Image (cartoon, rainbow, N blue to C red; front, side, top):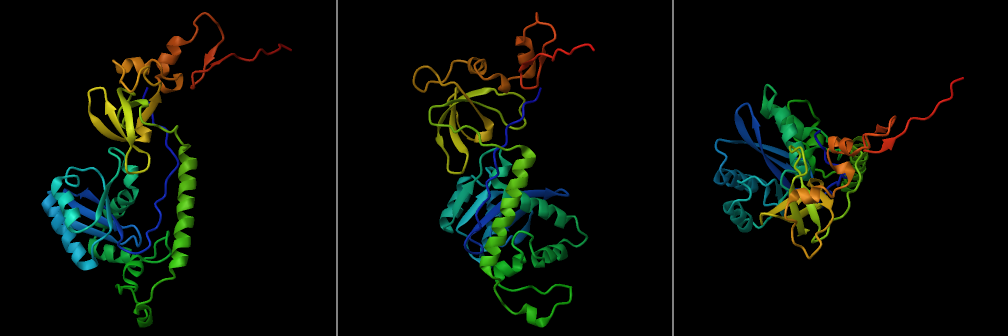
Amino acid sequence: MKQTQQKEPLISTPLPDRPWKRLAIDLCEYNKHTYLVVSDYFSRFLEILHMPATTTSEIVLKLKALFARFGCPDEIVSDNGPRFVSAEFQEFAKEFDFLHITSSPHHAQGNGHAERGVQIAKKILQQKDPLLALMSYRATPCITTGVSPAELLMGRKIKTTLPLLETLLQPQWPNLEDVRRKDSMEKQKQAFYFNRHNGARPLPSLRSGDAVLTKLDHQKTWGTAAVVRGESTTPRSFVIETHQGATLRRNRRHLQLCPAPAEGNQLPVQPEQIYEQLPTSTVHMETTLSKAPKTQKGLVVTRSGRLSRPVDRLDL
């Protein structure tokens, strides 16, 4: 039986204090073409850049052209794709003076802003005229902030194919206090519905030296034994060391806490030894069933592994 990871409460990213300060980037494939999607955390302004090649050099070239138009950001958030963690990209970050932040490996939710930008980009690319659709998106008020991406990035509405009064095209910044208040309220609502829908709850905290098992979303069982070496740079992200000596970075939802080794921080000899010590709720249901008493009649094993005895009823 496939075991699913417990989801933790949603962490909303605070709104930056100005436009183009923090960007999310990701690669997107559509109709056999690859695009670089860039989204501004503050304004939700979106760029969809066609990539003839997906090398790090080509990505750097596209971003340099983008920075020439809007300036350099303070931070760029990406996943751990090989093009983004290469030495060339790190040198680019140093040269253009921005902090490069990566989400936990195999945890797309950690870069949720970029994932949302990719979803919007794919919908735009499906339109008959993608460039017109992109312009319309930039001119349309966002439900989270209440104003359009163009207004928050450039301080003005942009002229589109729809009629618009000339006076409305004059530069005028929206009330940023109202924008922040609405953004905060919408994010609280999103977190509330996400947590309720997924039954999200905080997982037990991990400390350096804790013994854990790992399981990614596509894997069926908790398998690889490891020891926690410390917290990483992003929330709920930990650095672990496996029994084979590999150092990995994993999100908390991909780690199952288990009893610590008897002496020091030495890893157990076999992952199976840790697996046998895990609570019943973390192992396969068939294991639970196999351990249930066979001699007692009328007992029912619930989904959580608890033994339940049917209520005796009177025959009237």
